Image (cartoon, rainbow, N blue to C red; front, side, top):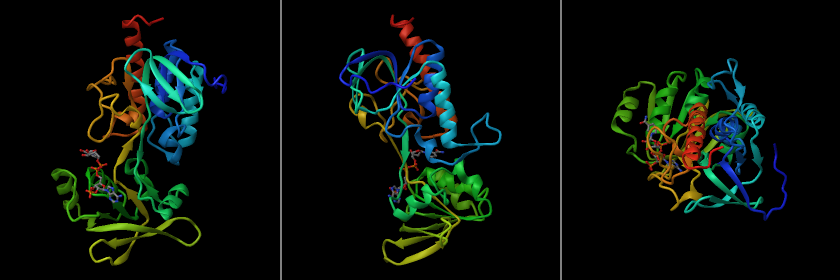
Length: 326
Ligand code: NAP
C-alpha cells in the first residue's frame, strides 16, 4: 500500500513506524505485518538502501543463481506490502524520543506519532569523492566498497585496496583468494588496524603496501568503462605513479545514518546506534535499531535482515508488555 501525499499537516499516529527501506527495514515490516501490527515504513532518502547501488548479489540465501540488488529489494518490498505495510515516500527530518508516542517529522508528509519506532536507516560507505571513481562505480566498472560482496568477480586480477584500518586489512586478505596481487594504498606510513590484522596482511605474500600515498585518479580502458589502473600521489614527494588494477576496493570506513539521533539515543564513538548485546533495544525504551545503523562489523544484507526480524519481534513484545498490544 502506498500512502498518497494527502493532508501534509495532519499528524498521524501508528503503532509501529519503521525508518528505512533496506533489508533490515523491509524485514522488520514483513514480521510486524504478519504479527498484525500494521506497520508504516518511511522509505528514507535512498529507497531500498545500499543494495540498490550494487549489481549481482550472489550471497543472499534463497537465490541460488544470484539476483540483482535492485530486484532483490523489489522482492523485499513486495513481500512487506503483501502483509499490509504502508509505505510512505519521504524521509525523516527530526525526531522527539523524549516522550511517548514518539514523534517523527518528515520532509514532505508532515508529522507522525508512533508507539514504537524501528530505526533501520543504514550506513553509507565512504568514498574518495573522485569523479572517475564515481563514474566507474555507477558503471559497474570495478570499483567497490565490499570485498565480501564483490571479490568473487575479480578472479585472476591485480587489485588495489585503499585504507589502513581493519576493514582494509580484512578486505586485502580476503581478496587474495581471487586476486594475483593486492596493493594496499595508505595515506600514512602507520596502519590504524589492529596488530593481528596487520600481521596477517604483512605475512600474506600476495599483499604489498604503498605508503604515504593517496589515490588521486582511477583510469579506465578507453570506452568500455572498466578500470585498468589507479593513479597514486606520494603525499611527501608529490610524485605521481600508476598502479595497474583490475579492481579498486575503497575501505576507508562507513558512516552510519544517525545524524537525526545525536543526543537522543546513545551512539558509539563512530556514531553507530548502541544496542543491548544480543538484542535490538536502544537506550530509549520502545525504540529499536536494526541493520547497518547498529552494525559496524558484519554489514551484510542477510545480517541486516536478521536483525530486522529481531527488531519486529522485540517491538511486538514491547507493545504487548506496555499495554499497546492488539
Ligand atoms: P577505520 O578504522 O575508520 O579506518 C579507516 C581507514 O581509512 C584509516 O586507515 C584512515 O586513514 C583511512 N581513510 C579515511 N578517510 C580516508 C580518505 N579520505 N582517503 C584515504 N584514506 C582514508 O574504518 P574501518 O577499517 O572500516 O573499521 C571500522 C571499525 O570496524 C573499526 O572499529 C574496526 O576495528 C572495526 N572492524 C573490525 C574488524 C575485525 O575485527 N575483524 C574488521 C573490520 C572492521 P588514517 O588511519 O590515516 O585515519
